[in-house]
Length: 163
Image (cartoon, rainbow, N blue to C red; front, side, top):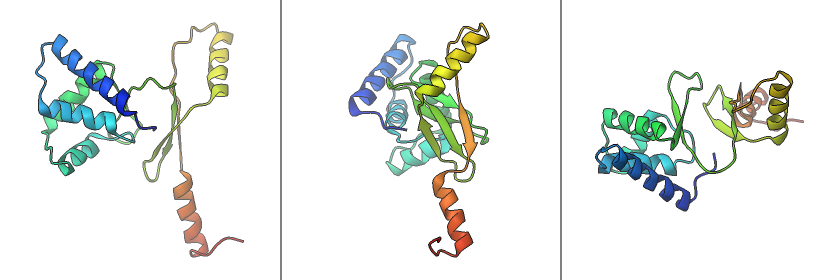
């Protein structure tokens, strides 16, 4: 995932504060720390990963607060919640950048974002052919990333370059 620019992250943080105020919810240091960490994340972190990062930064946040804050971010339309079939959810800030889909490595858990104009056109054409009003889609491709495949190749060749 492309990291949000500092301006995008600040704008989302401001929108989150407004979301909390409109619902008469307290704007606490812990909630803002969770939101800030989420908007600065270079990846699609899980709850455990967010909690680990916050602790490492000296900002311990309770599990209930973390879940409630992520739920508020999702309900506020600021963060997307993904279930990639790993037994836990991952989160991603909703940026103003174009739509994208995901490649998911089944070995290391890496999530790679991609966008493809041809795929977008094909999905819209397919919906049109079926007289279906297209609104949105989600594509998840499960497989093995290049890094894990490279490690497999190294183990087969004993670390020697392939000829």
